[in-house]
Length: 444
Image 1 (cartoon, rainbow, N blue to C red):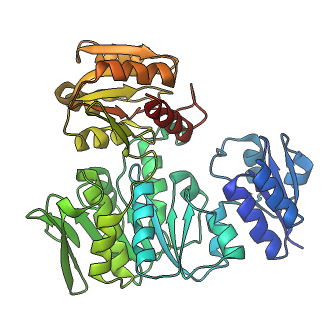
Image 2: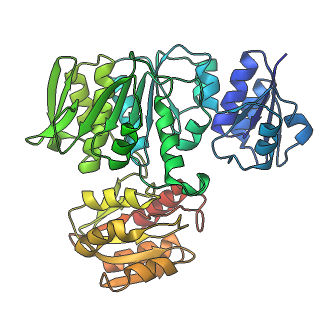
Image 3: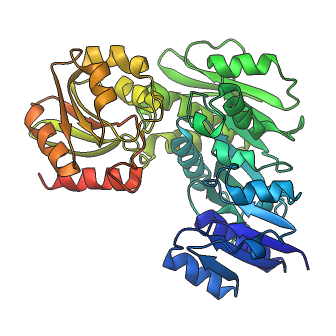
């Protein structure tokens, strides 16, 4: 009996273990951290052997194949040892794809992945398709393939997940953008990160489709070096030349397979230039799955924003509070600032990933009246922003931060949590950071 070892006992790992067990493999799961009770219960339900707070090397390196959770880097000693021994190491998505003939709509990019994935899923649900949500959102693809299969899956994929995919094929691949991010996982080489993102189109044939942002210079440069077999469907807010979706006269316009339709930009549920891109990518994906234009139009108008991504919290004393805790890199914050029209009290800070703040400098000068630095070490933020806005101050807790924002903001302002940084200095996750923000704002 073939032995499958799963490293990581979160959503991805637990789902992979269940699928392996259902397919009658000898399965062992190991996690150096603590496995959450709900995943312990799931593993026990399927009589899967597991351990946590430890890696028993002897039980791991006797694997025929290892399924690695995306958070585990290639440099982890067990992964290095497995590679040395010739043991294949794959991702949960790769494993799940072996056991499904369903349509796969796969979405990646440095920014906008979650919003576009959720929006695409919303459209397909509204159209009545049997659709599952997977990847970085929803239940793991492997668990759904094992216990609750669907005709179509919409899958959000990070570069880390793509790294472990070899034979998997996306029927519809969406590449939203590529900006510097996670370079510490790619030897600080941008070309390695770009190559990881482009793995989303590997194995595609002329029967498959590749949707991408026409105006992204990094994507454009990479495409010059590639021979793409799949059908290419670019989208743009700046030109209609050769594009399957574009903006014209205040409307998002779609032109695919003789289907020509549009939707007014001001009718979209998600406003801002970046959300035009997300809406075009989602609309194109749905069009390729033969969803009618009136259904797509209605879904684009009634979609509810993703939690922690430009999420409206409340208005108090004429001040809007917006939770954009998911903005963990500079480009995400650029999009957030681009979408806000009012004067801004901006919350920045956290674990800096080698950020270059010059990308948002002009927006900050033009729009931001005060910055509250929420982090353990705010030295780099002060070095860049001091003198460029009237007030730059510090906070060491969310309660202190929100109180300062409340004092600094006046009627007509927006308080924007869009930190540019990872959350792990003061918070457990960006979700924890955003949740605390909302709680503190609602307690004002």
